[in-house]
View 1 (cartoon, rainbow, N blue to C red):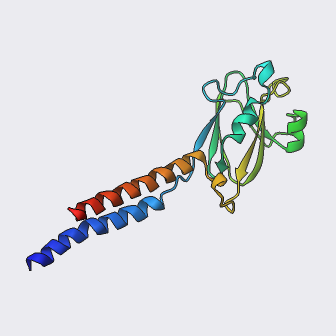
View 2 (tube, rainbow, N blue to C red; view 1 turned 180 degrees about the horizontal axis):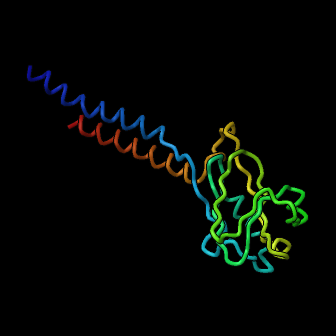
Length: 171
């Protein structure tokens, strides 16, 4: 009877580990909010930095459900077509906001074209193309940087727990 209780006591941590490990392995971030322009916000870039927003966008991975926040003063943000983006044409936006703190959530995969609605700002580089990955994109590059970080942390935590429990049983 005593050995049965001892065996049961050792089984509880194993069951706990299996449940915790499987839960952590399947943990994903469902959406993430990106801040366009970082601390500077949505501003006209300096003359030598007209591509800063597109360089920023290529360093990030966007998924359906993610959103971008534009912080600005005395400006606006618009979503336009690719043709309008190239021409900096703000006459027919699909989306417009000028509240100074605009959040735009991605509801489909594909390309999104954002420009400033203030005359002359787009031509000076205040524009960005954001590519939202398709759910079918299953390679590592389709994960947002946040999602990839969570996966790495949970994998490391699972390995640490396994080592801890293995060490416990060796004692």
